[in-house]
Amino acid sequence: MPNDVRLLAGLGAAFFLGLLLQFLGCALWHNWWPMLTAFVYVLVPMPYLFFGGGGGGSNLASSWQDAGKFLVGFSAVAAIAIPAILYHAQKIALGALCMELLAMLVLGGTVLAWQVLSEAEGSSPFYY
Image (spheres, rainbow, N blue to C red):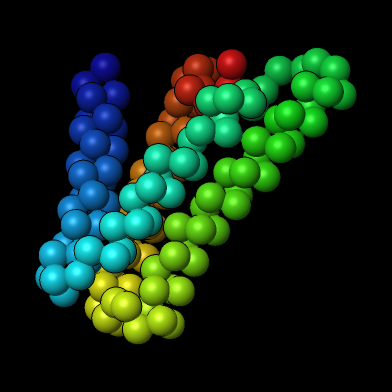
């Protein structure tokens, strides 16, 4: 049990580190354009919530799950593309781009670690 608490505390700390990097990417360069990426972080889990992700079923159910996986991939690519496009359009500095990409890596790694840990316990939050 104490090991579980340490894992959850570590995941919580990593999540807040990612959020801190997100805000620092904006605040240090006095430019809030990179905050557009925060909308993508909200959109990424939505297809899993709406379309589900597990269990058997008909081909129609499988098609909806495939559509949900496609939308998750699309949103994840947008998390990288938005800062890259803003840098290319010279709206943000190189440091802000690096900070935003690092924040995306930390937040994405945190979510993946949480999913792996919860699947190991047998109760994944993404699969109903």
